[in-house]
Figure 1 (cartoon, rainbow, N blue to C red):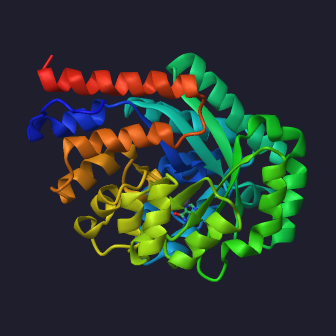
Figure 2 (cartoon, helix red, strand yellow):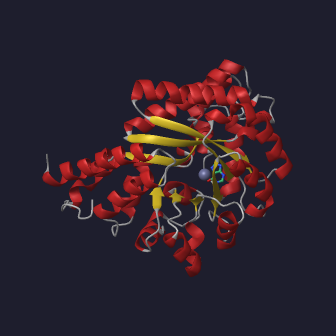
Length: 350
Ligand code: HPA
Ligand code: ZN
């Protein structure tokens, strides 16, 4: 839509909730709610270092990325069987569908599970079956992105890729996550080159806590098609120009950034600055069970904290999420049409 119909600011929360959208930055292990962690621990006989759901929730007070990752990996230790991965992903997809997510590209961390003796096939079969069933039962489209842990070696990433070879038909791409500082993209140059040769899409977390140089590295060395987070790009004018000119999407996660103290407060978030600079920014939930909200909570709280964000920005963010996805051109066109229709409906008050 080139010209947006006028929309009263009071209608914005309802519009943000109703708008069809894609979620491109969600770690499925980060969707494990404390109740499910305890239920799976019971089911699998896993001992947890927390006495109750309440005690676990109270531990969700993070000072930076690493303080979160420590507890996030502990939570994932309850996942043992194919059905556990299925149940986790089905729960996320049902919740996402309630937020009018029409398409999700879901990260999973293979090494978090294989190092505990869970076969990669167990992980992928459970997650993939949940994606297939969710499409049939909820009408939501979902694909999987296998994310290498950057605190481990490139050799370990290669070994993981080898285990994934028979499963590549169920994976659309690879990513790079975990502790960013001290683990620059260059460390994974060779394994990403191999993944590209195999026809996989490639994305990477960069510029969450790390400097703009890590974003340059993700683009130049890994040839990342999207940057996950990327909010530190604002400190480098030449990088901002490149991201805008090449339409490299950023998958921004405002509540995550607030909880991990990337910004002191949501009101200091730079989402508006990214949009005004013409970047293909999107809004996502990252680890919704840990950061206090799913995708619509991210939209609502960010728009409430940043009054400069307009209905035009809301449309742009949702539209960007489709453009930035790895879906087919036909799917993208259909979702974009639904988005425009939704905005027209809200403008006329129908
Ligand atoms: N950053 C890096 N690694 C992660 C994150 C994140 O925000 N969430 C889960 N793993
Ligand atoms: Zn992330």
